[in-house]
Image 1 (cartoon, helix red, strand yellow):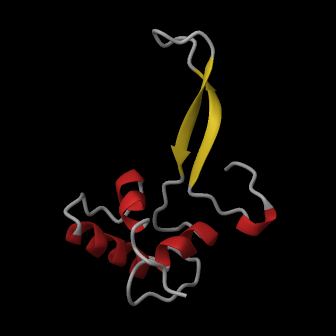
Image 2 (spheres, rainbow, N blue to C red; image 1 turned 135 degrees about the vertical axis):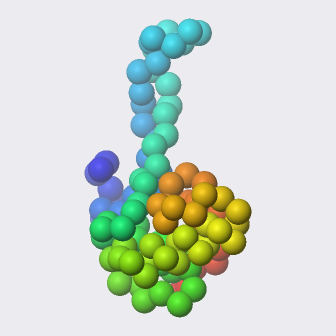
Length: 102
């Protein structure tokens, strides 16, 4: 994972970085690139809390366990995307529009 400033406590969702695009047609140097922190069962940390705060009926404990997995699947099915329980790009985008619980 990328280094993060102290307020984020090592949690990150999306990282922008300078990547090499020399082998791609039309590019002669580096370009800004993005990567997303894909989250799945077994993960822990602040980024898991971010997910848990946006899903109903979950304890915000920073542990992506079976209950979080099931809640993610339910959320995905309700939004008509692949319900695999993995928080990738589509799920992160949709969760970004959900107001977090405090």
